[in-house]
Length: 109
Image 1 (cartoon, rainbow, N blue to C red):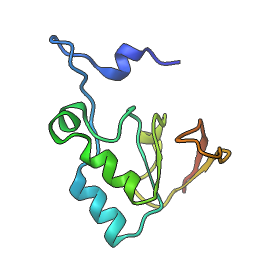
Image 2 (tube, one colour; image 1 turned 90 degrees about the vertical axis):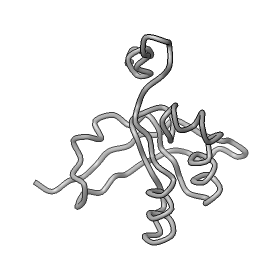
Image 3 (spheres, helix red, strand yellow; image 1 turned 45 degrees about the vertical axis):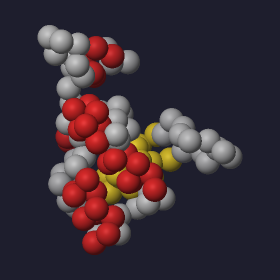
Image 4 (cartoon, rainbow, N blue to C red; image 1 turned 135 degrees about the vertical axis):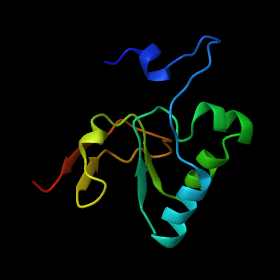
């Protein structure tokens, strides 16, 4: 298990700092490329700075599109930008808003 303080990357004032998705990027992926899911290593879809300024508009957008969102992925940096295939397996919980998943990637050599 990773250290929560390391994952949140607190600055001197106690603010969390990590990267996140931008609204324009997600709109392009959903509306032009018709993706079925997004995934990321941080615990939130958008950066803490962005979510505080926009009232979580990026998170709300992706969830309103009826797409799967997978958070806290590890080793995602080992996957190529394209050409790989990620499998995420998890049960569908009736009325549930989320559930732990087992994800793995198949990538070309």
